[in-house]
Image (cartoon, rainbow, N blue to C red; front, side, top):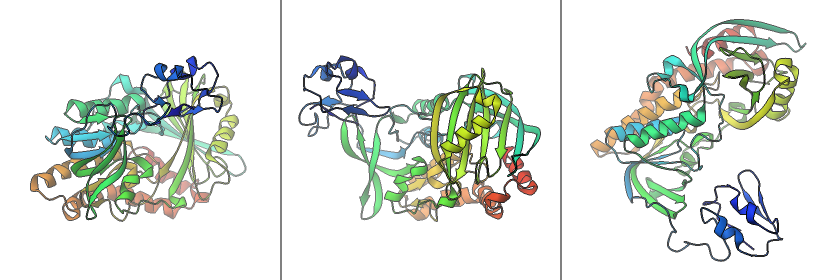
Length: 434
């Protein structure tokens, strides 16, 4: 029976179209080979990446085809989200040799984000570009839904902001990193850290060319809420349920929404411990999603989302053309964000606003700061935890202090109290990016 090398497979479906037995099935992000396969081999030649084989895995001993990697870089960044790409961009701009790894075949996909960002926070990194801006927003509306179903809506100026097209935005940041000199690799995963007597000395990399160890002076873990890089290094990145928001979001098309207003819905019946949002994306489209606190919700986030959409006539008339799900850490930072030869940024370092769940610019800020410290430490010839802790110190003295205050406020209001007038005042300020 034909076998699949899932590292190479890009799920294009070419093999399915030539199979005379109907033995191949494309199931979203995996290819399934049924027992009815007769090893005719037609699919092997149809595969554009050489991911199908009938026998020993091609390249198992030689490493197979693929662009060669250098054996050593100054910095390896794991994860090409906004935090990782900005870290690679800044490090390359400072003259360091940089490898940026992304395990998926397309940077920016799948989107696990409501895609909102404030103008003032964004412009210190990159000028707004219509290519990756779906909507410009200037207002915000807040609706509190009581246990009795009654609602109270307030609105006001929410400040200038944007709803992004993250697939394009994330790729643009990676392109900027490449233009600055970073080497970017997609469908290339970090599978482990290279350790020398417990000290981080590089990354084990698996891609279309096989698996190999690549050395570096500093690893920057920007691998999202999973934070596997930090865990491999012995850092405690485990989340408590109470500090985890379970989220689901539709991109709804064919709806009538204010194209310049973001809408928020708060109430235990809507999203226990969290809130629902409607972020316009132009042309009768909007990101409609919600997050629920994992230890409070009585059902999956998607169930709450479906019920919310059905309860809003102007949303129920739309069609979901995209579904994304994910977890958001609304937690204090890990007890350590650095160790010898390694730093964590973005969701991996729990650098998300605990009140709003927003984290795009937070991650970008941390990525820039991590690159600055990496450059300083490499120049000084000292990448120990003590030296790299300058990153943690600077973060906690700046953005970290704000997020710590937000976390204390979140803890001050238990889930049933988050629709209170006092909590809503705090939430409104946080949404405004202040």
